[in-house]
Image (cartoon, rainbow, N blue to C red; front, side, top):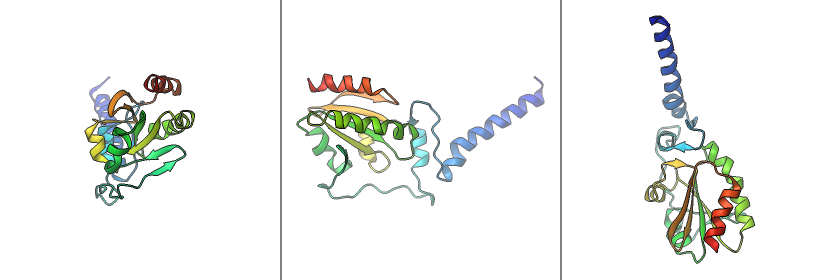
Length: 175
């Protein structure tokens, strides 16, 4: 390989890296650089809106939660009451709407909620809207699924995992 070839290759590599890491996200186009999930760097670059402003913290009233089938959409203000103080195990899916792997695991989480209704609670936390909870639990890659029991983390899954593997963890926590 000649010096010109190396220079051309380096230029192409730099252009690709710049496009995927800085240029596309600045136009609101999210990119995830890893196959298993979206990392903190991607999270930080894609949280700004198209006009460059960062999202404001979720300021919904404390009592408000939304239910998607049996999956609760919870926010920072109710995390303590809904997850840590729960009288049964709680599976929490930390996700973001722009994350492809998060969207892929979403239906699995809903299936687990339906299959385990009555024995555990299932919740989703949008990390873009709820940065305090995400930071408190060290969420630096999404999707991250955490299983809480008696206010403590008993299992943690980062990236994509099979429904069977998640179900086994749920069964250990509910027995």
